[in-house]
Length: 527
Ligand code: HEM
Image 1 (cartoon, rainbow, N blue to C red):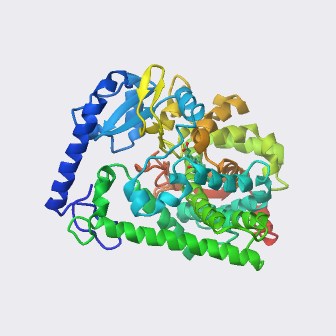
Image 2: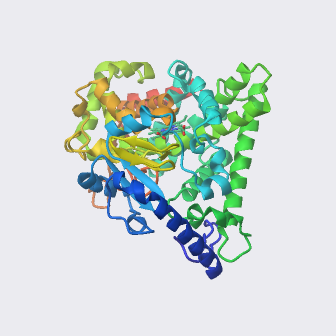
Image 3: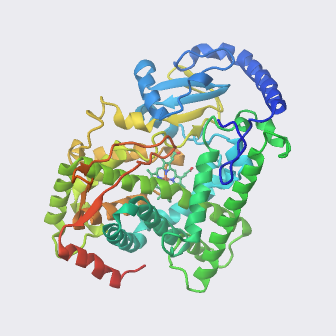
């Protein structure tokens, strides 16, 4: 929580300045908690285990603020696969095993597919329209259908050429300018998603649409931060006027909403207009859906399409960027794995050509390596929260309607009983078995009716980038002034996406021929 007036360019400070606002908040909160405490008393004995809860405030003071998945993992050893927390009256269920996640989020997905309602993010900043935040219902199903009809296993092949071309372009850029690694990877992923979604070709690292899309995503991350916005705990605060001291968060939310709506609309309009006049790349998600409607797209369909499209950008950008950075970090810290992976590519692809997506079935070690990246540093360590739409009983345990369910993906993929030596990057642990690798992706890409609809797209992107980097370059550490190699630590800030920090490296072409092949491929590039 912050407690001063906002600085220019920073998010608004939610609520510090006004004693009046705090008094209103405190009384409302106490009353709500008291009512809830009394009504929950009888059910409490059959609730899941968890740390001691104080009367009224529950576990509010124990909620982990830094890398919460690590604390939940420690608690898993004490309380087991399913644990209960109460944050000022909000029921929170942390699921620590893939088995329980399957039982609840997959098998009972008709009631476990909601999303928590966040007042700041949804009602105020306007993100309740994006697919990711939608409650489970007809609109969600329609939006997901629009995405999956374009990005399904049977249609995804039409994007392989741009994934390959973007991977080659990225490698060349990093060879030439390794210090901009993170922004190069991010721009590359953004370019790909913009092409796939809107048919829009990104213009360099300072493309105005990409910059705005990134800001929209950053605002989303800020608005969804648990425990930051008092209005999430006391929704009635949203009705107060924004001029009141302590209510600047209302102005912040308004600015975020405006940026979201204008970016969304302009991107969609760009795609519609340019796909029609032949200046956007086709196929793209928006053009394909409109073409299928044969000129009879209703306003509602266009509205759904517009919000589904911006969610594709939101769902794919940070997750895929983080995955590629985690891969590079793994290669720097585990050079023997890198050598083994390169040996497989050399044996299968040879040095006469660049690898392609069609090589994937012949490269089991590369497939294992990618699964190991998803396991070692999962992009979503707590996945995305689900919400329970009805009271339920599981294994004799009572689960409240309205509970937030946090799948602790980190623990599922780092439980030493399932994955011995979990911090070691070891593609060999899958024995080359796609069934074992699938156990990782089944967890890392989410659950039930909310599972990631971008799975096939991200598989293709990740494969193209990983295999092209390894085939053409040695990924080596940078050296300091004394010639000593600097191997980056594994560190990342506390965010919903696990995004490794300070990954620095050099891409050293494995041969002149490899670099020339990359340059040549640009002359007949499809993008
Ligand atoms: C390495 C890359 C990626 C990872 C690890 C990943 C992971 C996830 C996870 C864990 C969820 C939450 C699932 C749940 O609630 O149970 C999710 C949702 C989502 N992902 Fe991905 N994702 C990736 C890439 C992509 C891409 C490329 C797209 C673009 C189509 C995408 C679009 C979405 C959307 C739209 C949702 C929301 C689904 C819903 O709420 O119903 N993701 N993703």
